Amino acid sequence: MTSTDVRTDSTPDPAGQAPRRRRRMRGCLPFAGVCAAGVVLLLVGTRLSLLPGLGGMFGEETKDRSGPAVLKSIQDMSAYEAASGNFQVVVDLEKDAKFLPDAIRGTRTLYVGAGTVGASVDLGKVARDGVVVNEDRTTAELRLPHAVLGKPALDPDRSYAVSKQRGLLDRLGDFFSDNPGSEQAVNKLAAKHIGEAAKESGLTGRAEKNTAAMLKGLLGSLGFDEVTVRFVDPPS
Image 1 (cartoon, helix red, strand yellow):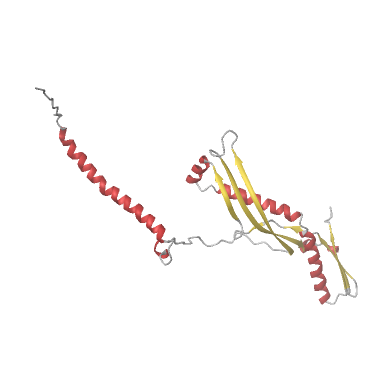
Image 2: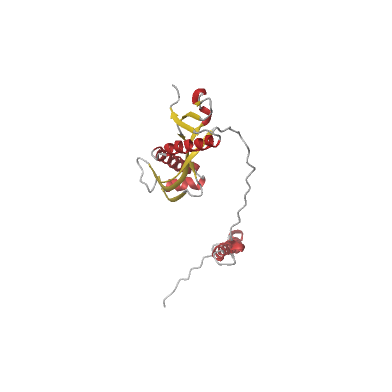
C-alpha cells in the first residue's frame, strides 16, 4: 500500500493578519475606482470638447486677471517719422552642449520674427543758422540733420515659433520652470537681424525725401516760392 503524505500549513495567523489584509484590499478598491472614473471623465470630456455644441461644457475658459497699466514716463517727441519698413526674418537658433548628445542636452528653435523699423528726422536738432529766409519771405533754405533709424519693434501677432526641439534635460528643466530666457533669446536675435536689414534697405534715404517733400509743401502753402532742404552732418 502506498502512503501519501499530506502536509498542511498549520502556522497560526498571528493577531488575525489575513482579515486585515482583506480589509485593506477592500479599502483600496473604491479609491482605485474613483481614480479610474476620473481618468475616464477627463478623456471623455476632452473628446466631447471637440464636438460641435459641446465645447462650452468641457472647453477652456480664459480669464484676464491682469492689473491696470501704469504710466511710467512721458517723453516729448520732436522727430518726424517719415518712413517705416516692414521686415520678416526666420531665426534658427541652436544651443548644444560640448560633451553631451543633442538628445540629452541641447535646443534648436525655428522662429519667424516680423516687425517694423521707423526712420525719422529730428527737427528739434536744427541749428540756429539752419533756417535761412530772405527779406521778402519768398525763399527759404533749411539745413536738417540726417534721418536715423529707430529700434525694431516686433509684432506679436505676426511672430511665432515654427518648431522647438529640446533634449531630455532641457525638457525636464522646462517642466519645472517656464524658461522665459529661451523666448527672449529668439526675440533679441530677430530684432537684431531686422535692424541689420533696415540699415541696408535705404529707409533713411526714403525718410529724408519724404521730409523734404513735406516741408516744401508746408512752406509753399505759407507763401514761399522756393524752398531748399539740405541734410547735413551735425557739427563735430
